[in-house]
Image 1 (tube, rainbow, N blue to C red):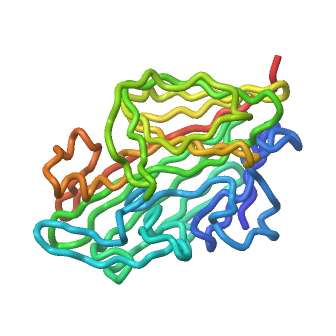
Image 2: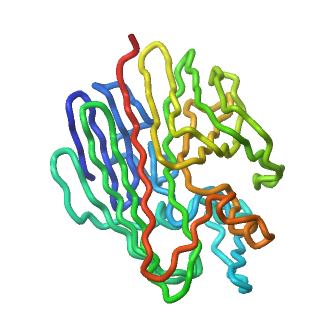
Length: 284
């Protein structure tokens, strides 16, 4: 376990457990859904984890790429899809670390979970105002490969929590949790208590805010898509900056332009980079 501290913020990171963030606290107030790292058994239960080399779902765990079908591992119990990439289920290596920062690395060789070699670094820097994160993924295969980056942070929902952000469109999922159609949308400005949502928004302006009587939390990113997921029964809300639409590789194979989907096609040796920050302060 790595513990990072800066000002009144504290962050615990578990490199061996998918490079996940076990918790982030302002004083003793949890910013993310948090628990002590020693009690964490899976990255799925963590406060946040990186999404590498794709986010959300690839339909029916089957990747169709350049005319070839690649069966993938169904990596979420009985669910029929491949979900959230492979990084969250692999150990990450600590390349360097100090009191307020760390750089982790994940090297992947082709296997049943993902047929393309890549390496990825994850840099975490804790400042007195928030946690800054950077992912950099390089295609190490000998052919062009699809790639995406993102994060899956769970922000704490408290009584009166309200989320607000601006966007241009929304991809609504069907019963199979895959996107069906894109509709024009302005984003969200809603109380979280009764919110039941599992949508990918595009044209996001890169700022999402969660406010309650205790904290004001801001998620910032240069990525243009945001997945938001919660139900009334959950005590947290997932606010996920991502680079592509869910199931983008299938939509791309069906003829949708990669640019419209946010899907990157990396040439051998090419790198893509993504950044985000989670800022926290006491409510006035």
